[in-house]
Length: 287
Image (cartoon, helix red, strand yellow):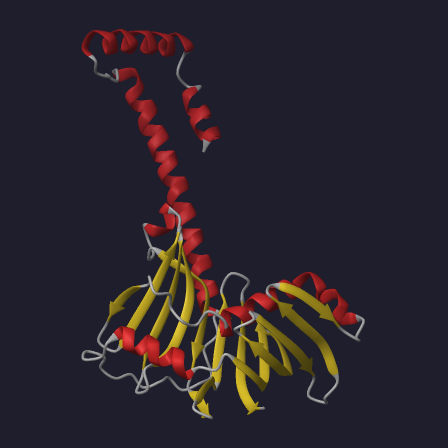
């Protein structure tokens, strides 16, 4: 864009430029207003046309990119939870009841399908969660029962080990795996200072943290947590065409299994929009 402006301005003689600057400076001092003299009307018109051309080309390319990536997005393989009216339901009671029913310590076995565009990776996971101590451990196995790797997170201090040489290359990405597990299983209770938005069939709690927003969506016949997501405010340019926030990651909970008066997420669909992959989790056993 700077090159376009420079090339346009070079068409005007240096004498006219100096004349215009000094003449308008004098008028600014005399009348406290800025006047644009006629020799520069054509210059501004050319600059305006070139800038508009570049702007609309940029918009067209951007929308094509958005259309392509939206076309490649995955859809959760689970049946949607049936929503009911929440008009007469107290949001605070919903949050408190859910907090009482979820398990803060558990050992579960799950199947995990990791999908990155057209690539897929399947494994079994033995997950030991302790939300009170802010820790977890994960042992991943292949379908034949061979141990792939072990991941331990004690209060966000991550340790990783694998008997397979090829999987040692995953070491730089272990932090992302730990973050995904925390996004799915940790901090699933809205804070006491959360704002509340009540819709026809959903109760939304949300916390604002600078340019980010965390949403907790409750609903269904049992009024459980259905979705949790992290949103980030878009730049001013994208807000001209799209919504104010974009999704960084989201996790959907499709039903819960009850054991010993405690709830365990049965089917989970996690989507990391920032890194472009999704994870499908199915509960196999509660130990």
